[in-house]
Length: 173
Image: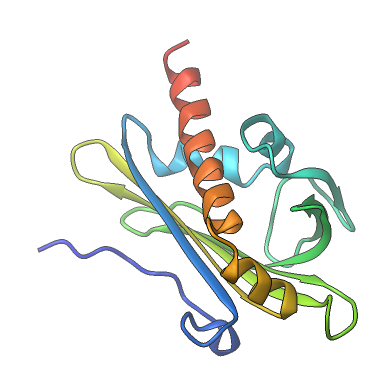
């Protein structure tokens, strides 16, 4: 029996205990974790397949992510500060993992803290699993969770589908 891996959550961001949580997943044939990782870990590629991200800047070396990388980007109209907290590139029989803590400083009404995690896993039959989940704390997160349809859920679906589609086009060109 083959079991799928799951996101490793810091206690503060445990899903079900935060103000907003979304989970998006696709399984795609014809891609590998190694290929997906190259495009996901390189932030310069993000705007080419995801329309809800811009103005990516690093406080240290970039555009490649690495453990401890400090960067910022604009999403949903917010300038988000971020630090990579988990960075495990593809390895034999282990899923690749990437996660960052993101935050927006502000008042009790405007501050936001988030943990955005990715898990990439090769599956039998030449398929890859792309899972992204985000857990958020703060008033803006509460508002987003009440909004229907949930804008974060829809945007993250665009992100993972855009990533897979961009890589599929490269594979067929």
